[in-house]
Image (cartoon, rainbow, N blue to C red):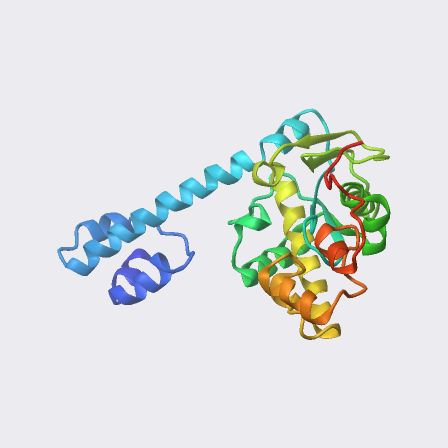
Length: 277
């Protein structure tokens, strides 16, 4: 790290690029030095750095709150806490995929959130790669289209989550789940409503589940060209409905879902998609 004197000798544009636009730590004394600089650019940079520091403090507070459930469990003596979430309950095509993740204690990753809140697909992929690198262990579980049609989407989602937990290299001693409870899970568990927004472990699992399923649907796009699966991921978008009407139903379409059954002329069997046991 350059000294404060060396930094102040740099052009203001370089300082802005390094500290205001980047993620480098703002060294002690830099803000005060900029405050004492009469140049308009220096005053503007000081204002930008203060705004960045406010955002950093707010993100640090958010990430600390995101560990509230994990912190309570760590304090009770639980060590390996798994977060579990699924992706792909609503689409008309493709499997439902679940992720399970055990994060290191007090893990913080800037931007960690429910995968649905991370709109940039490239950023989701970056975060998934980082989580996989940092995690104590992680795994994915799937329930196939055939299983969805046989046992219904609600129970298929639970099956995918159970498989994800069973796939972990280190079995958890507590499981946090987004809004549900996993049948036949040997570890104690807690379902948290909107857990992907409230628990770091569940949020990490949601990112792994979504990126895994998105990658699978991109493969289906190559296998079945013309349906645009890489774009809509199997959800019931207008473009997907048009492709169904024009090209017909594929083996990866869920025949227990009403729009697909209607095209096939079959009476619906899943009147309540998310019916609980």
